[in-house]
Length: 265
Image 1 (cartoon, rainbow, N blue to C red):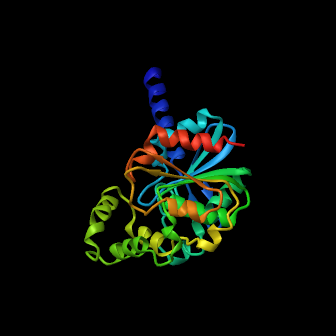
Image 2: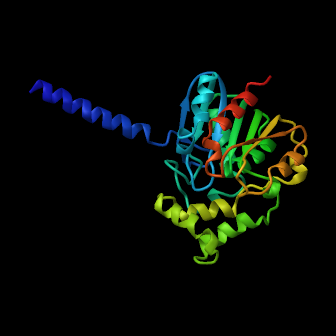
Image 3: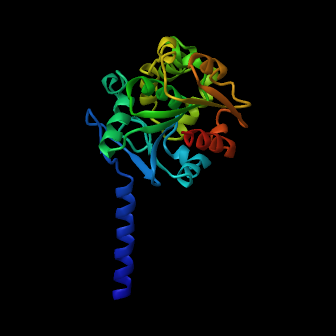
């Protein structure tokens, strides 16, 4: 009887622990709850995931463990509207660089200064804007992106927004929309994320002084020519790794390039 009681208590405790670990852990500047995870000890580095994605994408990529093994404290968050974070639907919740304010507020909450940032795809777009907002960023990596996002009328942003708000308007994007729905993503939120996606102008990019690495897959043409981004940011450089847009960040070569760059003095 006592044995059965202990087993029951352990089971209930494990369920509580699991549920607790999945709860949002940080209340941001406007009350939005942001879920995050921390792994490792050492110099802090924030990983920013892409569109129709969550921080889980980093857990399936070698770069996360490679950074931990190299002596970094890795901070991963579900950007507002994604994953286990709150998913407000109002325009006010996404305008004025709210996602970047979340990142800055989280790092301040954790007491982590002089941190690095790794952003992939849409996460790279956020990284660019963060470089213009937070002087605490020490080094940055932008993966799977070109300079095209600096145009507020970038067709990729506009087309995705239209595809999400006007069903059938862009048949070429229907596969991505179907995937988003199948994966449980909130399509109202996804439309907001495109509507209010941060824009970092070429003039702003030209003033970035933070060391920047651009990484792109050799078969990735989704977001344009990455060399154009390198040309726009003085002192930045490009590394090409194997893979298409979805696969490049999950390669050992991506992990090696990121770790080597962030370990530079």
